[in-house]
Image (cartoon, rainbow, N blue to C red):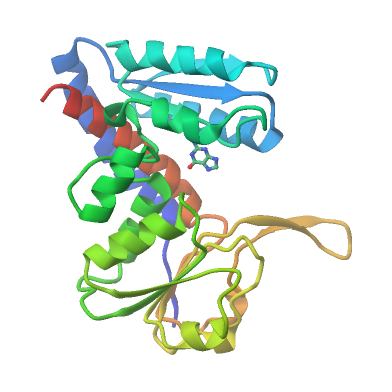
Amino acid sequence: MTAIIDGIALARRVSQETADTVSALAVRLGQAPGLAVVLVGNDPASEVYVGRKIRECRKVGLRSIEHRLPASTREAELLSLIADLNVDPGVHGILVQLPLPPHIDAGLVLDAIAPGKDVDGFHPVNVGRLSTGTGGLVPCTPLGIMMLLDTVISDYRGLDAVVIGKSNIVGKPVAMLLLEREATVTVTHIETRGLSEIVRKADIVVAAAGSPGLVKGFWVKEGAVIIDVGITRVTRPDGTSALKGDVAFDEVQHARAVTPVPGGVGPMTIACLLSNTAKAAALSLE
Ligand code: GUN
C-alpha cells in the first residue's frame, strides 16, 4: 500500500508550532512579528496566492502589512518601497509576489531585499548560504518538501534522488537540501535525455516540471518516495476542470509514499513562509 503523505495535516502541525513561537516572540518584540506582502499588478493567480498567505499569517498571529501597487508602478518606486521596508523595525519579513510586470527587473528587486528579511530565501546571500550549508533563510517550497520527506525518510545517506525541474524557486534549492543530507542527487530538466531511465533508478523523486502527468507509473521504482510539486489546472473533455500534478497519481501504487495534488506540497509552502517569518523575527533579536 502506498502511503499518501498528508500535506494538509503536516502544515497544520507546523503552523501550530509557528503560532506558539509567534506568541513568545510578540512578548520579546513588544508586538507581533510582521510580514510585508507586496503585490504589483493584478495577476489573478497571484491575487489568490497573496490572499491565502495573508489569511494564514493572521491565523498564526503574525501581522501582515499589505502593499498592493498598480501594474504601472515604476521599478524605482518599488525599490524605494523595499528600502523603506528594509529599515522598518515593525517589518520582519518581506515577500514580493512573483511574477512582476515585465518592465520591472525581478532580479534587481529580489537583490534589494535585506537578506535577514528575505522570507522567500531568494536573495543571493541566502542562495549562497544554502549552497554552502551555512544557515540563512531557505525557500519555502523546498523547505516544505524536506519536511514531507522527513515523515517517511530518516536517513538520506546514499539514496538516489532525482529532481525534475531546475528552477531557482524549487529545483535548485531542493537539490541543495537533498545534497546536504548526503543523498546522491541528479537534477534534470526539459533538455535531459532519457529522463524515464533516470527516474527509474531513484529512491526519491521530486517532480517540479509543471507538466501534468509527466511521470508515468512505469518510470517509478518499487518503493520510491515521490513528491509532486506540479499543480496545473487541466480541462477535461466534458468541460469541467481539475488540478493535476506532474505524477500520474493513479499509476504509482508500487511507490512507498506519494504526495497528493492538491493537499501535498501546496499547504506546506505557506506553512514554511509563516515559519520563515517567525525565524526572521527571532534572528532580528540576536
Ligand atoms: N510566485 C510563485 N511562487 C512564489 C513564491 O514562492 N514566492 C513569491 N514571492 N512569489 C511566487
